[in-house]
Image (cartoon, rainbow, N blue to C red):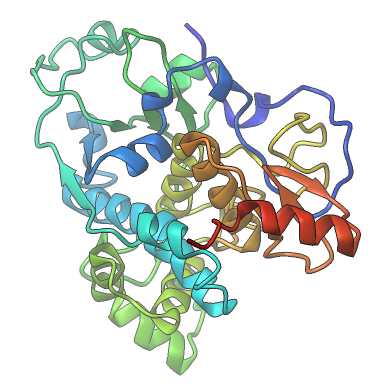
Length: 340
């Protein structure tokens, strides 16, 4: 079975000018488009997901809280990207992209899902029952199972094959926001850390912050509160929300930013500084460039636009270029519909 692990991606050489950093998975051209969430976002009004936690793992985290984090992360990859476009003052230019990102999107959790085709799951968890429904993306929270599949203790996105649905395996995560009635991370109490007034307020309102993000109708300040709150839980590694959001980037079709070699198309050579580069970071301009080019790729749309990370760099049909004024005017005129 073909597997995608965070540290083993994109070993193809890069051979073009570098600028704003982003990248798409090299497997996009080899796999059916419907196996990526970007394609489903274009075609469907519902994304289904399933959270699987074996009984012995439920002491670490519960299904309801993980479901809330998943919904929040999915909204960040849609509504959250849209907020970045508005903040940059480019809503009119990206109106078609905003219509996709802001459309009424139902995030439907499945209470039970079919696990029969997941590699070694029945053998590893023989008590698991088979169900008829298959989710668009499945989250399996099991350190033993994920370690068994990858050969090491880590979390990863697995695009599977035609028999196995795409899934995210989660093993190496720390405390989860909204997991406990008392939200302050235990290690802070153990070492007597103190909080600022803002931090105490955010910790007190952790559950409501994530619930607001999960609904999708939040503003820039609430988005900042989300990532500030999340940072409070990253004292000794990435939080569960960071890992879920990063791996969902892969599920949409984006690749890691920290690798040195880049693929020749739909990528730049220079690694970025956003979430796909470092799970501690919020979604940034790197992911905005990546999501726009990703949606264009699946839609078969050609577009020339200035990178959200660099005004001096333009992305022409997914490839970064340095354009002279005459060339830029020509590219932009070609994508403007003729007036009747």
